[in-house]
Image (cartoon, rainbow, N blue to C red; front, side):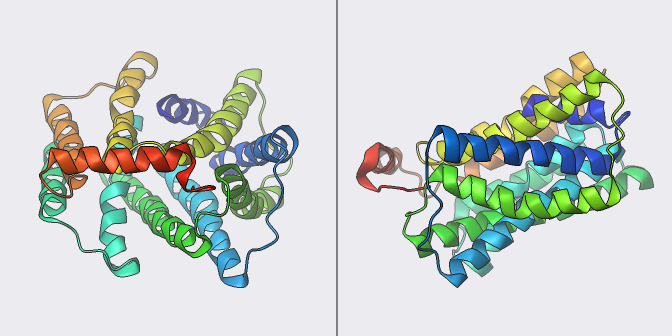
Length: 301
């Protein structure tokens, strides 16, 4: 996923943003449909009611229409490491929205972690960015809100369906729904796609197969095995790999203030995952979730 950020930034030097949104999405749809329904031989669920389809449509549009448009347009205006840094605040926004959507009250550690992350943001941006980059901030905010909202919708969907939809089928359906809308928009505005070099076709194919198809599905699957704080910490660690790859491939450099900001953000992510200060409780939760992953709850996302 970190390399995907670099690939997207490289492609946007010569490829129009709309092309880098809809064309990889079309490739991702084809990849997931072949994998889920041909290679794995899974079947399309016939037992879903209207409310469940409403959740699937909302998740698909948020993940594959609103968020890609916001994130891709923002990457034109922001350094790739800054873009990734801001995107990693999706966990904090997800937690905030869960108070309204899922009626979940944040714990003391979650509030402390959020405060630490906000201090880290203040350190990262030691001065006010130029107006061109500030517009990118707004676009990232749109993408983060869309992902955070769909994260909560995904959890509500899991509760409604009692974990009866397999991970592969879930990922493929929401990709087909949301991605299909994005592909139709792209065909209407950007056909034929203006991609001239084989290198750019590689970028597009890589992003479609690996980032949109494989990574989205693998990430959903990992949430069945890892504890929530493990998944969030690993997800936030993309900022580290993105920074290293950006320095090597794009020449981006980070100052001391940015490094401190990243460290505080990672610390904040770690803190928000602590429900209670009890390692025994964490061990007990891990045993329960390991049993769930081994098949106690069939079909869990």
